[in-house]
Image (cartoon, rainbow, N blue to C red; front, side, top):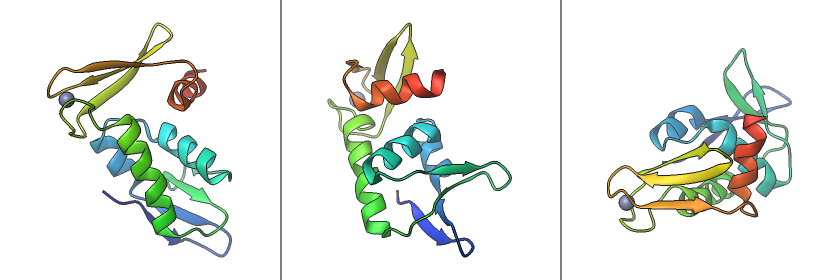
Length: 123
Ligand SMILES: [Zn+2]
């Protein structure tokens, strides 16, 4: 499960495989994109015509995937069974994660990064 960076043209770098991976782990790609942008402290933008995310500075794939793996570990891996098997959604101002394998449930507090990321894509 790795993201890739492709030099798409002279100015921008495409982050590849975002759509495939985020589909597999049941997280909206906008959430991951915003998380990565926060961690990198640089903007990530979405191009509708190519349906891909772009950054305007080159970073190493290692750095990108380190951030991505941290996200997976913190927000996707089930705390009980350790599989990438959770589904996270917002229900009435609450962000809840449910494991589709073992049924383990958890809730994110409003000071957690993911809480604000969910809020930002809903509004
Ligand atoms: Zn589980």
